[in-house]
Length: 342
Ligand SMILES: NC(=O)c1ccc[n+]([C@@H]2O[C@H](COP(=O)([O-])OP(=O)(O)OC[C@H]3O[C@@H](n4cnc5c(N)ncnc54)[C@H](OP(=O)(O)O)[C@@H]3O)[C@@H](O)[C@H]2O)c1
Image 1 (cartoon, rainbow, N blue to C red):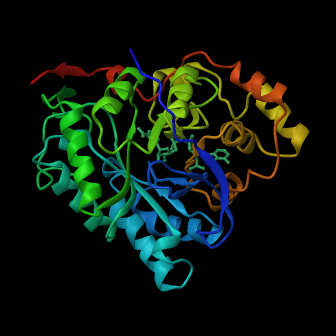
Image 2: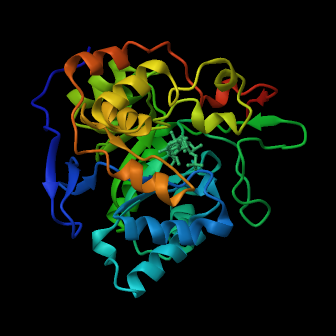
Image 3: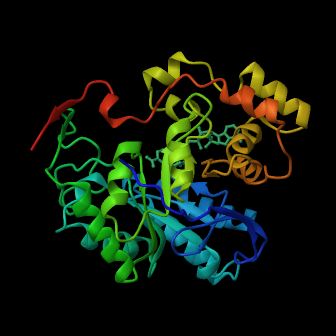
C-alpha cells in the first residue's frame, strides 16, 4: 500500500528568470522555474527548424521541447546559437528539454546517448532530460541509423524489445544529473502504476511527467497522482487529432477535429480568442504546462499568447466533458506492426 507523506507543492509563479516575466512552474526537487508554455519540435522539418526556433525565441518562447526521435536536435541547436549570438537571449534564460529514445535504455547506452544529444544541440546541459517512453527497444547503432525509428526493421514493420527494466534506465538518468548533463530528469508516457513503482526506488524523483492530454483524453487519475506526488505535468498534443491527421492515423480521421468543434469555437468567440487559445488555456488554467508546435510564425505567436484570459468553471467542465479516452500516440496500437520480444 502506498504510504502518505508530506508532499512538495507545485507552485505556479511569474518568474523573471527568463528576461520577460513568464508564467512558470517551480519544479521539484530542484526549485528551477519551467515556463508554462513552450514550443514543441516534433515534425518541425530539419530545413526550417533553425529559423523556426530563432523566430520562436524572437516571439518570446523560452522553452523548447525536443527529442532524439525528432531528428532535428542539431538544427534546433543552430537556431538557439544564432539567437544567443544575436543577443536575443542568454543560455540561462532558455529551458531546453530533450528525450532519451527507446533504443538507448540499457546502462551501456544512456550516458553515451545523453552526451550525443548534448553535442547535437551544442549544449553543456539540458534543463530537462526525459525518458521518452517506458519501452526498452533493441539497440540501434547511431552510425547505422539515427534516429532509430520505432520500428527495428522498417521494411518488415517489426518492433523489437530489450530486457531492460526502468530501474536500470532511471539509475543512469540520475547519473546524468550527478555529472551535470541535466538539471532535471523526468518521464514521458508513463502510466500511473509505473510511476508509483519508480517513486519507490528513485533517489532523484522525476520533476516532470509529459503525457498526451487534450479534451478527448483528459486522464484525470494520472493528473491527480502527479499533482499529489509533486510532479509537474506537461501536456502534449493539446489540439488532439490535429497533429495525427498528417500521419494518417485512423483514429484521428474518425473523430471530429477539436479546433473546429462547435463547442470550442463558440467558447472562443465568447472570449474573443481563437479555438487553439481556448484549448491551451483549458490546460494551463488547470496548472499544466503546454508545448504546442506550429510551423507557422503567426500560429506560434498565437499559441504563446493565450494566458491573458480565463475560462469559466462551466466552460472548463464542458470542455473536460468531451473526454472519450481517445489516445492517438500509443506505440502499442499503431496498425501494421509486429512485435518481437528479446
Ligand atoms: N512525449 C511524447 O511522446 C510526445 C508525443 C507527441 C508530441 N510531443 C511534444 O508535444 C509537442 C506538441 O504536440 P504535437 O506536435 O503532437 O501537436 P499539437 O501542438 O497539438 O498540434 C500541432 C498541429 O496543430 C497545428 N496548429 C498549431 N497551432 C495552431 C493554431 N494556433 N491554429 C490551428 N492549428 C494549429 C499544427 O499545424 P502548423 O504547424 O501548420 O501550424 C499541427 O498540425 C510536439 O511537438 C512534441 O514536442 C511529445
